[in-house]
Amino acid sequence: MIGADGANSIVRKQMGVDNFSLSYNQMGLIATVELSEVTDNQVAWQRFLPNGVIALLPLSENLSSIVWSTNTEIVKHLLSLPEESFIDAVNDAFWKQYPKNQIVSNAMKTVESVLGNFSSVRQLPPGIKSLYGKSRAAFPLGFGHTSTYAAKGCVLIGDAAHRVHPLAGQGLNLGFGDVKLLTELLADAAYKGTPLGNLQHLCTYERERLQHNVPIMLGIHGLQRLYSTDFSPIVLLRSVGLQLVNTIPPLKQLFINKAMH
Image 1 (cartoon, rainbow, N blue to C red):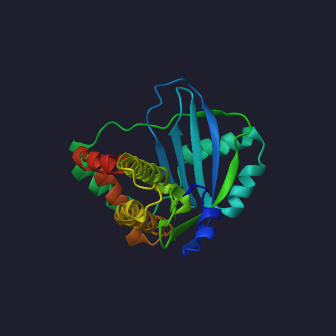
Image 2: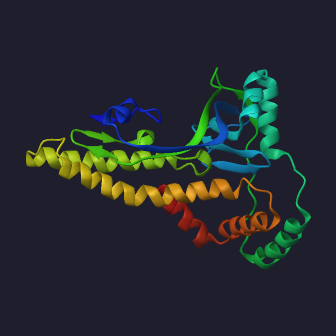
Image 3: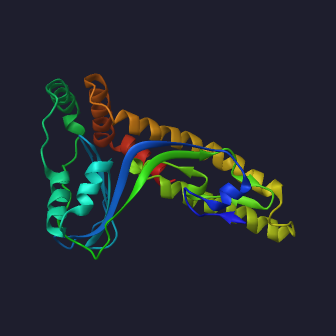
């Protein structure tokens, strides 16, 4: 049996394995939106806000998906807004200029002057025209990891095994990685005539995915904590880090390749 039934997995509960979880006291609001103009729409956008993070993920030439992670009260308010007001709030989230920390701002000007020769032309996010259908929904955000992915005849994949904050967009990739490896191991078992529930194959899956998933999960958790503070030295550190990644092409490509793996 493959448990692919999400963060509240019934299969995991039936397996009787321990599951560590913590709440971020936030919710993720998701929606499909129509862009103001038809474009190639091949770029994903993410902006860190004073009270959370918003991402715009391309779906087609004129449609994108929004994931807005913020505190529960704000999400409830956004869900209650009329469509036009909601779209205004989304556009504001991407375009509004928020007050800046002067210490960080001055330091970043120095960094930008040093890196100026490496900087590329600044791109801007597309405007949002309307909500696509009744696509607004929300879910609680948290961190979770089960003590084991496999038991005799049972295996867990995706959010049933591990749960991360959506700010880095890696939850789906982790799940795809689980599926890819498990499929390969089950195909190998079938080819050799070994029972599919054989623990040897399932433990290989567990070992390899733990080695891959846990460091990424801890990194994402660290990022969430890093972007949940307004302490000036930390804000400066993360701002300089992002600027370095964004303006040095080889470094930027390294992060892209890692995220796509």
